[in-house]
Amino acid sequence: MSELIIGLTGGIGSGKTTITNYFLELGIDVIDADVIAREVVAVNSPALTAIADHFGENYIQNDGNLNRGLLRSRIFSNEADKLWLNALLHPLIRVGIIKQTKNSTSPYCILVAPLLIENNLLSLVNRVLITDVSEITQIERTMLRDTSTLTEIKAILASQTSRAERLEVADDVINNDTISQQEIKELVISLDKKYLSLTKMV
Image (cartoon, rainbow, N blue to C red):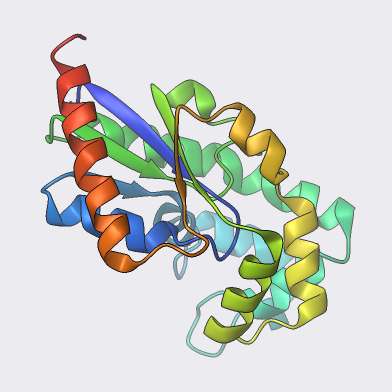
């Protein structure tokens, strides 16, 4: 098991994937909460069956997978449905995170979780690394990379912890607004050295 668990978070479109890829290049294990969230609703899983029972069979695609776009639209327009879904999935995701962090073999590991703060996962990490960008940048990047409408993106932003609240819990911050890829890489290399030194103090 890793000596330290670093929680990496940031709002939608803040560049978390770019940063985690650089940690992976350095041989650091990355546990992705979004990947675990997809695994718990895999085809024929109990959670997927519960979703179909609650929302209807049309939320399951012909190939047996969850219709994520339809579900996302539903929960961002209905608070009760969102709370129901969170109550179903969050405990399962938490179990998956704990299992994977325990199986990590690098000196420290990165837990990347967009909702690290919102889903009360701070107790699972030793330090928090925030990738920080402006809301304008978040909207621009998200609209470029997927099919979400501006209304959907703003709903997602409203559901996430504010930029100020994130920065309040940060131990380390990468400002990813106007920084180059090379500068991000150099910052990750610097953080890697810092985290490795911290593992020797645990």
